[in-house]
Image 1 (tube, rainbow, N blue to C red):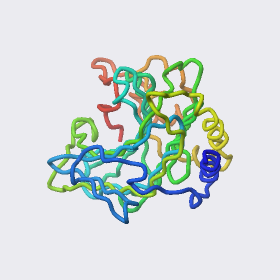
Image 2 (image 1 turned 180 degrees about the horizontal axis):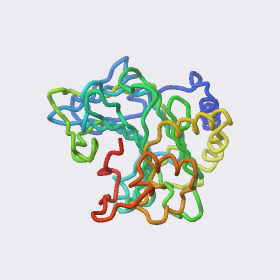
Image 3 (image 1 turned 90 degrees about the vertical axis):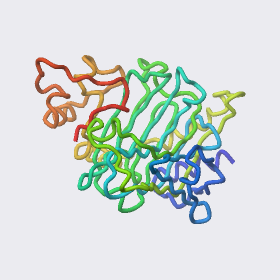
Length: 325
């Protein structure tokens, strides 16, 4: 029942993940692209997505969801991974070409000896001219083992988790209007060639000598309000959203871990990027300590000093954001 599902969601968010059902691939997903670059393992409980010279690969949820708890354990490719992008994200771009919503985890590969980077991003109502990227280093090597990546999306906030630690909390504000994701979305997982932008702004490209690049997915969780896009009514999902709101509370212990993560590992936040936004976007809540730390980290981008002469050109979306590492 829906009530049971939501009870399990709240149990899981509180840290008792074993109690929530994990789907096999066929129960929740379909192949998106990539032919035989998508391979099922462990009786369909694990999926390997690979990228080679011919194609990347990906899968998509069979249902559209309005709000929910979406999670996977992911192990990324090792060795030289420059230009490789692995994405775990929600989108409705196939249905709403001009005003789509999106909630992203993107993993950006690197040259040998340098770590994977991760970025999160949010679009609402086609607001792709306002990239809401944050970028982070990790406290572990994501190619060594599986780690859990989770998106919790409610009517009023979005929380990104890694291994049950919240790393970003994005709250809906009245000023944002429709820029907060609010239409039903599918969940996607993909691996693809992002040579043109992913590593140092395209300086380092995918080297297919190291292919195939394989991203492994397991512990697939899809918990939310599945909707029919044609007969869609948000009323049907009200109870779902209310229950998710209860489970979206960040405990004091989790908040402490989130603050620590952001202090140690966040390398970029659009809210402080003065080369892109003379005034921070309306939903930004400026944290003076974050501002000061990022300013020391990258004074040009975050306002410690001004470059005279040639301005840094920033494109409209994360796809071509220069690397800050």
